[in-house]
Length: 185
Image 1 (cartoon, rainbow, N blue to C red):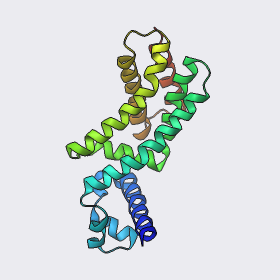
Image 2 (image 1 turned 120 degrees about the vertical axis):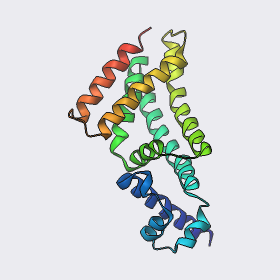
Image 3 (image 1 turned 60 degrees about the vertical axis):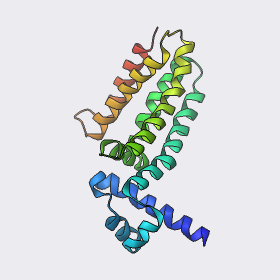
Image 4 (image 1 turned 90 degrees about the vertical axis):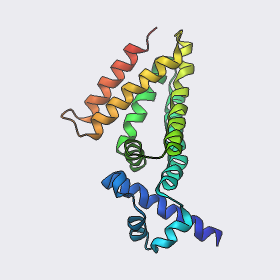
């Protein structure tokens, strides 16, 4: 029974990712989740009490996966500059992935305060990864610089997601250049 519930919950989360990717936060409804998974609408409520609960579960599931990929890329870098470059490149490489597109859709939507706080906390984990690197480079305010660096990444993500005139490789290269120039003490 527990295994069946876990499988159903995972199916609901995958359906939620697909809905968010295809139609943004407006597409994430319990009737749509029920239709995608073949469950009765009332059954969806057995797994999640609200849309915000689905979002919170996605954040709890997907952000750690995303963060682990960014962290692994940074660990592969030898110098602080290589770590910063990996931080930017890996996040931008994840833009096309379903998990990332769902997270972007979630972040763009109107969510309750608890869900927004979970998203902020997860982003804080990403920023914490680079604070130490920036401190090692001699920055007096590594947290501030890390937050500004993440701003460069976020702007590049939005540009790529919007299907900008520039291709994603060009946007990535520009973001890496800006990141490396802006993180020099």
